[in-house]
Image (cartoon, rainbow, N blue to C red):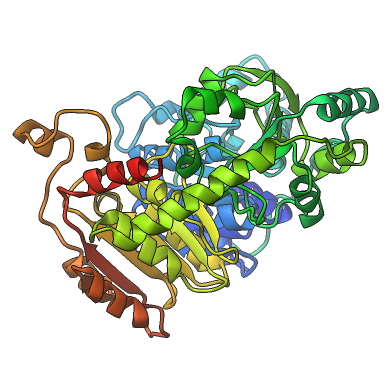
Length: 582
């Protein structure tokens, strides 16, 4: 087998293999050549080549999002590394294990005006779980640095051997630690790797055999006194609101959901990204709470708010729980607990399954009319919703109703941010559709790349729904050789940032059109042709229904459907919808 000659590169590659990191996304470069040589010549690794580093990192994030295992991205030195930052911040706030491997110049070449050189160590320090800054092998040290180290040492040959041994042990420890943290804490880590030239030399035998350090295991069980105390509070509370944020499919056992559904003192609010379903639960939060009066808000105010999962999409539920604070807010999760509602009282550092296993065996169903009352309101809202949808004009709102009804069975839906995710929140999605969205930072910058990364490893068919600005912003995502033929992109093109028409502000002015809504007349037709997508369009309801009839049929190429909607009425249709719910 072929290996890079540089021992440091061998060490990184062998430890990635020992930690079962199989997927390696590489952006072409020279300084990272030792890594590229090692990864691509070992059949253990599945390697991808993606030129645009920003797209490469989001593509890797999409893979890690699905596998829940560390995925590595490897780049050359300089600004290439900084293009990873949007995906790193998303991974940081979404708890996705992303391993960043950045090649760097030797220390003596930094700060002297050399090309493709920036200050790389700790560059992501505010949005990273761990930064490992590795050391050059002795043979690659600048002679001035080496002589400075050895000038007071009498037996120089022996000292060089011990110095290399210390460097090797330090590098092994740092790499092990970073990879273990990414896997156990589910988040991004950065390993900065200095290489000196020559970079392309190869060998056929390994010269180093790094030590593998296993990660420490932590107990997820809640201590007896704490769970007993919580069970007592749970049995007393007559109004318990469970709010589920971003949550992976099948992460919580159905038996616990069924038990919660039987308790009339428990209301479970879910979002489309929660991937939790039960006929007794309450999806489409905004549809339920937007028209509430102050008295109704008081009736909904919980004694205990229990949250688990990632970040919450609905602004309205955040505003409600900040204004009508629960007496207690408990959060379940092995990661950080966000005090989103400024009332956090307990953080259980465990999984939702472990928490409910310990809690529900100690508690009983509480006699309360809490859920019954809100179930009646939910039914009323559903009737109003169906009536409005039936009579609504062609608009973004109508389009999302049609799209979400016709998704493929047993498929994956990836959503762009801004309008796409918010419209989707208003509709009940099929139980067999798994939903994902980059809600860690809620940016539009890498949604398409993430969806393609997801599609490259998920055996289910994947559909990506995006607004026009989000799609065009990340159009380099299509410069990708790993897009399966059953991948589908749907673009809602209303010729600008439609979300800004919904938000407060002065509309219908040149200033608004140019600087906020960013009006345009672009289409995706030429991009689809360039990247070999089958291109389809729809400009009214009948055309859309006709296109959807065959859009998901089997094809030899991925497909892109661009839906054109009127930009000036979408905000009024949505505003009228919430009025109609009353």
